[in-house]
Length: 277
Image 1 (tube, rainbow, N blue to C red):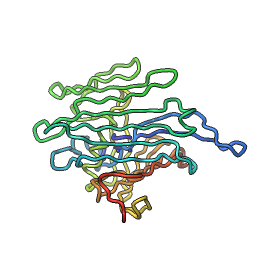
Image 2 (cartoon, one colour; image 1 turned 180 degrees about the vertical axis):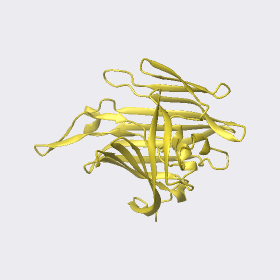
Image 3 (spheres, one colour; image 1 turned 30 degrees about the vertical axis):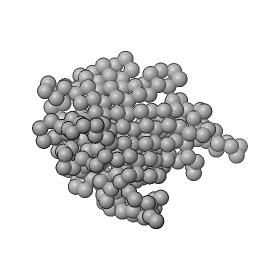
């Protein structure tokens, strides 16, 4: 879903399972099936504001929830994604995501399951991440990544494959998954444009965040009003529709590569939205 999470104003915030399918001799053939679970990195702040400007607090953090999505390529469902936010004890939150290939995609997928987890803690008046982990093992290598936050020292110790990096937190940069919660929490107050730096694969990456305003899309819940946001990096981008009536929950995401829609992530159910009777 916020996959991804994400300096945003909103991940995301969601990250997703990329399935490339070629139609060949009337049969769908999976080619280079690559899960890239990083569902949503979205919203923005004017200019070059820091991620700290998009704060998580006990007042604006989304309520405990679950959400399920279907990843669709060429009209074919190729993966399922679930997101959840829990609160095991006062002052502590756990944000999770699991993406799993399904059907033929599961047979050809480079890695059929990707899991993300962020642990967050109330520190003073803000809720900050203290730990992030992505579990992803392909047939050839381990592509998992980690981040441990030491806010008292303004350092995040990160790792990806054989790379280990200490990242300066003085600009309040957080990982691409945690940013998804920031997106949801700040979705109702979105600037038109910003440059967002986030931690990804033990590096700092920058994204353009563009707010296109309100839009109406058809979902399993019927027509929904949502903020349409693009997160762009070079020729690759995610277009996210965030439902303000559901605490900024992403209800649809499109992965765009070189100007063409590669796949669409569609919401199927959520405890934040009631189905029409």
